[in-house]
Amino acid sequence: MKVFKFGGASVKNAAAVRNVGEVLNAFEGEELLVVVSAMGKTTNALEQLALAYFEKKENKNELYKVVKNFHDEIIKDLLRVGSANTYNDIENLFIELECDLETIPDKNFDKVYDQIVSYGEIFSSRILSAYLNEAGIKNRWMDAQNFICTDNTYREGKVDWDITNNLIANKLKPIVKKQMVVTQGFIGKNKDNFTVTLGREGSDYSAAIFAYGLDAENVTIWKDVAGVMNADPKKFADAIKIDAISYPKAIEMAYYGATVIHPKTIQPLQSKHIPLFVKSFIDPSAEGTKVGVSKEEEVHLPTIISKGNQLLLSISSKDFSFIVEDNLSKIFSAFAQHKVKINLMQNSAISFSVCIDSDAKKIAQLIKTLESDYTIKTNEGVELLTISNYSENGFSRFIKDKKLLIEQKTRNTVQLVVN
Ligand code: ASP
Ligand code: MG
Picture (tube, protein in one colour):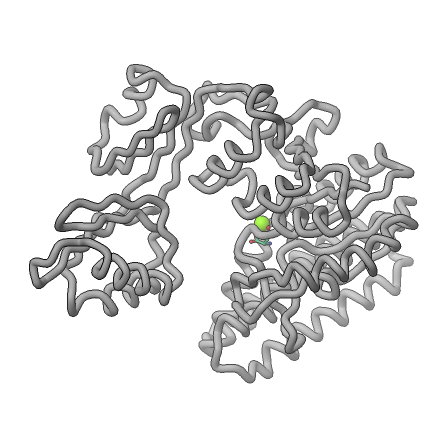
């Protein structure tokens, strides 16, 4: 049994969806679960739409039309005129979305967000499933929310692994054994029956959750790139594909900014030794990258990963006390309270510095909590570089025009906060 994940770019228009059909054609007869993301940039569009309705903005109807027209165009191009049922299904889904938008009952924006934004994956999976059936690739559409059970952390759902695994192993697996299943990434449900999303770009993670519960042979993430690269090809013309990497290395790369895999994806796969392939949907027979090889088999290319849009926060106490356990514990609880993830930290006797994602709203709340006891300095617009397997001379060229703010080294890796 295999799990395939197709991201937004792989279903961004009718031609792209047809291409997914071609990729899948080559796997006829396999036991296959297909996980799909929202089409193209639909999630961004739905984010704006949810906010516009929540805040009763004037452009809310226009934003709705953009999403509707985008999908209508794809359907018109893709499906036969005779597919009345599918047209009706999707039309009905849009009516449901409109009803949900018009009757937003909740004061909790994160909860509203999840109920609205999750439509993107429902649309894409419905359309893909219908198209594949028409094209002779028989499959069954299933709702991922019936299998992935989360807590109530809207927009960043935490998976209840026991319940989820039970459902996947006992209810979904027998179906996948009989027929290809098309389902959604990114979404699950809580015990109150509300949709909870797993965090932006979370469809890779969904694929891993399904693979774990199915005890899949492997997972393939189909991308518009050749595989995991040793640097961002948009920034470095000499970037090359890495053929094979270990799980720990992939976790490190994903966590520190290689956007090709969602960071939460690897650990569930690692715990069951399920290999992950990252392959090109443009050139499906090419090798791609294999994640999950042993440290010995790993190819040690120099890698450089950049995480942009970062903020450096330096915190020192107002009462001249040292930054030791009692201060650190207060500081960490403020970070936990406001759900601010720390990408890198460094402390000295009198100050504690962290590099975090620049999320203006969260940071304002964090500073509000801390500012009565601490002096806080910020450096905006910094970049976190994670560089491995380079000699000192090899990587100095990446930072020559930049101001170095923090440097941390382990044996093979150096992390730099630069401006
Ligand atoms: N559609 C969601 C997003 O764009 C999930 C995903 O693409 O992985 O964040
Ligand atoms: Mg996406």
